[in-house]
Amino acid sequence: MRIDIITLLPRLLDSPFSHSILKRAQEKGLVEVVVHDLRDYAVNRKKQLDDYAYGGGAGMVMMIEPIDRILTELKSQRDYAEVIYMTPDGVTLNQQLANELSLKGNLIILCGHYKGVDERVREHFITKEISIGDYVLSGGELAASVLSDSIIRLIPGVLSDETSALTDSFQDNLLAPPVYTRPADYKGMKVPEILLSGHEKKIEEWRYEQSLERTKTRRPDLLDES
Ligand code: ADE
Image 1 (cartoon, helix red, strand yellow):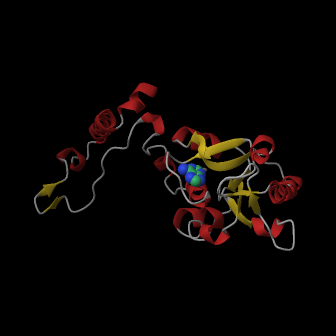
Image 2 (cartoon, helix red, strand yellow):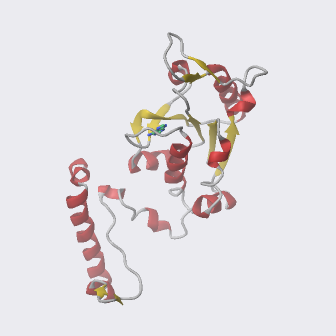
Image 3 (cartoon, protein in one colour):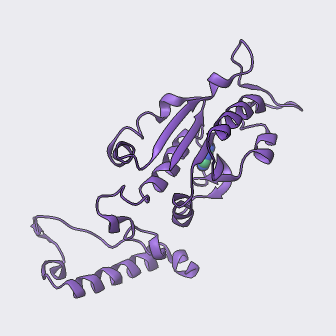
């Protein structure tokens, strides 16, 4: 899978993709992440990328032409399954959407800024609009990193223990059970006995009950959905 991210602030995306799991996934050749500076596609000598909104009002609007230019170039080089626009008024990202996107081909992610993009970009070029939650960020870059992370960790081979993505919270609409590590007794705070028993079947049952209990108390809405 290849993910092309289009942004006005490419440096903002340096860090999320240069560490840990996302870095290793790229080194192993399981995903290719390419960040593009939209400024390289600006239309005039002033390198202009945004302009005043027709009809007036505060805030600048990202122009259609630079975006059309880069999308045309990318699409002439390879096929893309989706052209995604990060925006607070898109569909809210959840595990199911991440699962679906991880199974698709190449993706383009466009990060918005200012008052957003000219609506004609959304109408004619964008195939999916995604929000990472009901709050407004300064731009789409952090949202694009969150989306990419949620997708990339699901690609087979990215996580060393292949089953670990399957036991994440939200897979099967259940929150993950609590986990513990050594020491078994820290200043009188004890690890549940059952986890020390070595009884695999009972441990699995305990984990399932804990997941269910946690979901009932913290996120009952998830149980209504399944
Ligand atoms: N851009 C600004 N806020 C956002 C959000 N909540 N989700 C996705 N993109 C955004």
